[in-house]
Image (cartoon, rainbow, N blue to C red; front, side, top):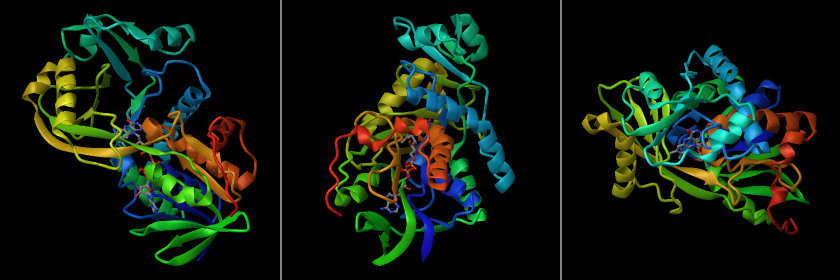
Length: 369
Ligand code: FAD
């Protein structure tokens, strides 16, 4: 098999990149050791919410805003291509401050910067979301922060990339990248060599394992997030945030409560402590949850980097690109990441925006290949 591009990892990042590359006319394969989206990308909450809690204006924040703006069209494109509705919802997000809590700094700088935020009194917040606790002291409505149903998103991406001509190889693990005379020429998978002009590593928190044999010592660390889903008879109409948790209502009646951030290696257990923490925070925000039924619990491993920012772009080794480390924002950032990586591969140019997310920012050693 000779491909123009092999993408390692069929999460939201690898799948979106593969889709864009195939649409550009390249011969592309995605190699996924499980099923498309079986890790962090299906475990996520699907919030497209760069503004809540963003502490300052940075290139990362700008990339998040740009990607958020791409979402409406991306969701529509996937619906057209697959007939799968990813349930993109644009009703905004409500951040609630509980009595005694200091309003955090993200609100004031964003208002000063002219970003869309509406400060609400408790009464106004409760008119918008009657189930919110009476102990709230203030709230901020973020009209531009939205959500998508990320399980349906992964179903749609799977269908869309196959229809665009991507060869999706599931149930096979890439065990090594092949390097010859200083450049990557393919991957090893099931003891056979698959050749490609370019390899993109989008293997989430498993990316480091593939890179370190090439001397690319980049720490991508798993950050476990536990989630639960509940169901009951008080309606929630918006994504809600408090300082301790978030709540995401889905169209099918499930309400997601998330999420812990824990550095416990590759351990994916759902723990009593994690569930306890989520339930306590959720009940504080929406007291009616006490009567709700718990219908599901799960966890996923976010790919984190030393500075918590994604790595998008050239690796320093010829023909090897990286698209990983999206930590808490991989769903949000998928459209922009795919555009950047596909643009780089098809044009050979490195967009200015991508330069902020290069691997050069970390100390690394590239040994003789
Ligand atoms: P993954 O989805 O983990 O995909 C990597 C894939 O690579 C996996 O499927 C894996 O099986 C495969 N793989 C690994 N190694 C190999 C190999 N050697 N060979 C073949 N395949 C391999 N983001 C948001 O934007 N909004 C949210 O609301 C949000 N909420 C979250 C809530 C939780 C609980 C969690 C865990 C994450 C959340 N995130 C959210 C973050 C988001 O899920 C991630 O940033 C995103 O899914 C990362 O996508 P990825 O494709 O890089 O990684």
